[in-house]
Image (tube, rainbow, N blue to C red; front, top):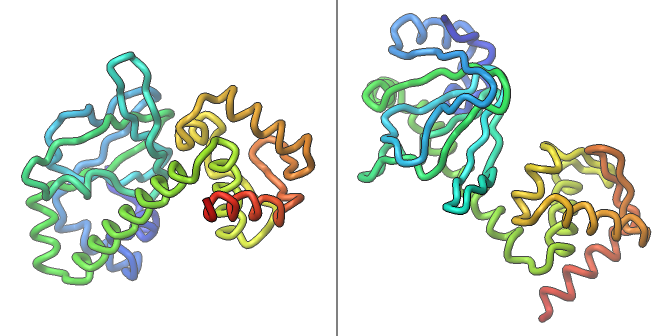
Amino acid sequence: MKPDPAVLQSCLLFRGKSVDDISAMLQTMIYTVKPLRKKEHIVNEGETADHIGIILSGQVEVQKNHSNGNNVTIARLGRGQTFGEAVIFRKENVYPATIIAPGNCCVMFISKQELLRLFAADTDMLSSYMENLSERLVMVNQNIEILSVGSLRKRIVFYLLKQADQQSSNTLKLPFSRKVWAELLNTARPSLSRELAFLRDNGWIDFKGSEFTLLNREGMEDLLEKFKRK
């Protein structure tokens, strides 16, 4: 199965390349494409990372498995995004988490050896790869920032304000499900629902499904300012 060059254009690794450029590269690249079914494991925690994966369709979830049997979704990645790039060149190149397909999806795999060949032939790809790693580091720092804000209510307010800024509107749409959001906030979904109901009943926000409207942005920002002053 051959990847769609138009899809690969959305992958940071191929950023700036035309469809024709990517089509020509695919003629000489060594890669595999694997269709995956719902709930299928793509990578298990502790496995050796000797390939990177590029999501061609659908989504994948990065999960951390705890000894008590609970699984926490760390991230959800969609079309054009990659996984494995942060660990493949480590000395201890093992996956720190499990990656599964929450629904049907398709993933392209490129080996470490093939990546090195591509980087040697095309320094722009190497630059794009490093940029991808930098963006991942920013994402990790953002997650740490969310968890360090304080109470669950403050974490919710902080996240909603961040999303409003990113979407340039006080009406915003969550990029994932409530279940994934609860895991990102390190809480249980019922606790998240109770806090959202409190914020809505007190006139701070309104919401329907995944769409939220900030009704009292000034009050939300003041809540976070009080936290910063402590």
